[in-house]
Image (cartoon, rainbow, N blue to C red; front, side, top):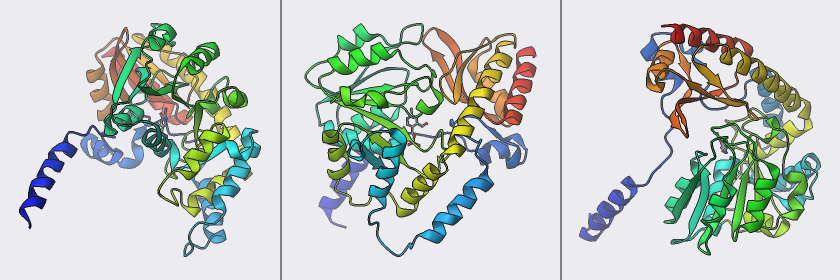
Length: 372
Ligand SMILES: Cc1ncc(COP(=O)(O)O)c(C=O)c1O
C-alpha cells in the first residue's frame, strides 16, 4: 500500500468518523431477545409506520407488479407514467412533480442541489433530523429557532435569522415529533419572506386538516414533499415525490447525475397503489379514528398528557422520568420513540397510532407503569 494512500485514507477516516449520521436505535429482534419474549409479540410504535392496509393485500399487489415487469430491463417510461398518475391524484400538472427514492432521498437531493459549503439551512426545533444531517454533510451551517410553547411556529424569530447565506428553510407540517400542523398563514409568511428554497415536508399530510398542494402555484420557491411511507403504508418500498413549480421540479428531476434513482418495481408499485387509492383512504380514516380514541384513553391515565395530533402519531408527556418509562416499556416489548425534554415538557415520547390491539396493549401497560 502506498504511503500517500495510507496518509489520505487515515485523514479521511477521521473526517468520516465525525460525520453525524442517523441512527435507528434498537430493533424488534434485540428488544425481543432482551425482554425474553417472541419477536411476534413486540408492539412497534416507534417509527410512525401505518399498519392498517393488510400485509396480505400489499403482498397480492406486489405479486401483480412482479408479474407485470421485466427485471432484466433498465427503467424506461415508468417514472413519467407515475408522474401522470400522481398528477391526477394531486390535481397538479405533471411538470409540477418530481419522483424520488422516498422523502429522505429527495431531501438529500434538494440539499445537494441548493446548499453549498458555507451556505446555511434553517428550521425550528424540535423537528425531523435528516435535513440538518444533509446540510452538515455539505459543510453548511444549521440554525434553529425553538417552537413557541403552543407548539406553533415562531415566525418573527425565524425571519430574524434569514440572511443571504440561508439557502434552505425546512418546514415539517404536520411536524415530527409534535404532530402539530402549522397555521397556514404562518407558513405562507415564512415562504414568502424566505430568500432561498423552502422544503415543506408533508410526509403526514394525508392525516391532517389541510395541504399546501392546491396552492403550489402561489409559491415559486417551495417544494412540498410527500411520501408513500406513511398514509400508503409502504415504508419498506422507498417512494416519495415532490410538488413544486416546473422550474424547481425540472431541476429535481433532471439535475441528478444518477439516471435511475428509483427502481421500476417501486415506480410500478406506486402506480398500483394509486389505482387502488381507496386502500389508502380507508387506512387514513382508520388511523384518524384510532388516534382520537388513543388520545382520549391516554389522557385518562393519571400522570400522562397526550397532545392533539394531525398525524399518524402522538406526542405524549409523562410525569415519571422518560428513561424509566422507556425501559419499563421495552421490558414489556413495547417500542416508542423517546424524546425526553421537549420545550417546556420534561418526559416526552412519540407514539405511533397502531392497530386497535396494539394501542390497547400500550394503554394497559402505561396504566400499570404509572401506577407502580
Ligand atoms: C417528517 C418526515 N419526513 C420524512 C420522513 C422520511 O420518510 P421516507 O420514508 O419517505 O423517507 C419521515 C420519516 O419518519 C418523517 O417523519
